[in-house]
Length: 398
Image 1 (cartoon, helix red, strand yellow):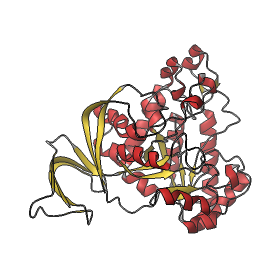
Image 2 (tube, helix red, strand yellow; image 1 turned 90 degrees about the horizontal axis):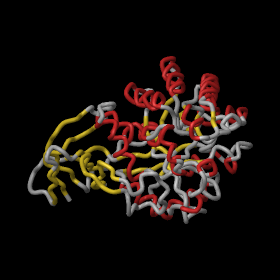
Image 3 (cartoon, one colour; image 1 turned 180 degrees about the vertical axis):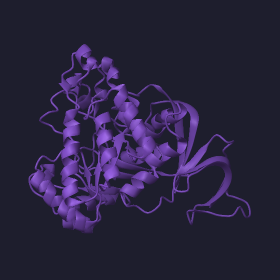
Image 4 (tube, helix red, strand yellow; image 1 turned 180 degrees about the horizontal axis):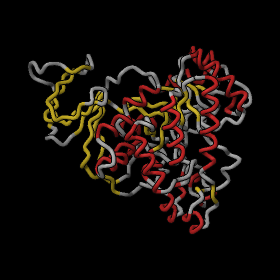
């Protein structure tokens, strides 16, 4: 089947292409071909619709196995596709945790080409290493505990193993002992009567992990970067040549601490929402390449689990279906170029995960307004529910 795209805005970060063109795509070979003969389908872009490599999500949470009432693998896959993603890397905090190759087999029964992280430690407890060698042989996409690892001797030993395994390693720089509040310390936390966590809960961990990476020289990806100081530390470390990459989440680019005035439990995150200066620093980090990628950090909860007083609510919310439109707000404002935004959601995550170039395509209408309802995700844990959003993915071609 051949699809003709007429006058679409083609975005390709790999070739730095941003132009309105006519393209013909062969669905069988998954390549662009010369426009010979008639196409089976014609899509008129009118210079407005955007076509680019399909998106890859760096980290998202599945409810299944263990908590299917939050999200099943089927609904997670559907939500991803609705958001323009052809690939989603699933975090290991399922039940039981992804520390056994048998868990990987279970997920692939329901989602054959799913990308799945293996756990660094048994039970994600940070006390002893999981069977990382067997997990690597089974085909995990990389390793993470999706929580701070406080046993630094264990972490050092793992980084030595990871150097041999040649699999991506994702670490969340965070000090739980210091992170005792529901919000970052700020005038807003004080005004709203919320307990505060100092930003140093993140930056001290970043500094310590950088020293550990200097020791091992093992490539590491920093997850959930949220503060301006962390961006500065990572920028300096990259300039020194340390083998690191970093990502932030769409939540920290879409909200700031002042938004907590609503006490919406769907705005409870770890790390908490930052200041306007933090958000500006994250955007600047995407601009200059300090922040390589933007993750959905899609985290489903049931209504009963999430609908609690703000300080008691579990952290995280869903986001796969509207990460691209939310990031596009920064393109619309002129803070990011279209290529910078698309790269952070597509080719950059793929590079971090050592994936081959994406052969699928995503078609996006940046001007289409829609109401956030009737979502593909089983969870409704989002502050955007019922609100109008501008920009929507139309289709994924694979």
